[in-house]
Structure formats: structure tokens, C-alpha cells
Image 1 (tube, rainbow, N blue to C red):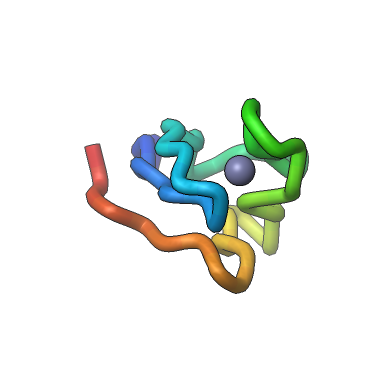
Image 2 (tube, rainbow, N blue to C red):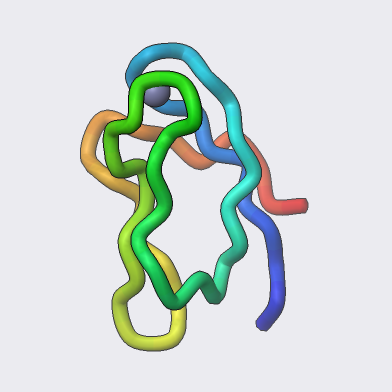
Amino acid sequence: MSKFLRVKCKCGNEQNVFGNASKAVSCLVCSEPIATPSGSRVVVAEGCKVIKVL
Ligand SMILES: [Zn+2]
């Protein structure tokens, strides 16, 4: 599935993350990792929240 997830970081920044990202995704504001690839989909980091699936 090719979906984007709207993820909210611990710092409050909201960012779109590709659901099938093959690389870890970092927050554009605080540079903390917000999602890491796991198999064919991403796992959102602890403390970060998926707000919605786009
Ligand atoms: Zn952040």
C-alpha cells in the first residue's frame, strides 16, 4: 500500500511520512527519527503519533 501518514513528532511538528519509506525519516524541525522502516511498512517512533492516513 502506498499511503502517506500524517505523523506528529514529540516536538509538535506534523509531517507527512510515506507509508512504504525504505529509509528512516527524521523530523524536519528537531531531527529526531519519527519513523523507521520495518519490512514493507514504516513503524512510527515512540512518542510520535499517527494523526491520520492520507
Ligand atoms: Zn520533531
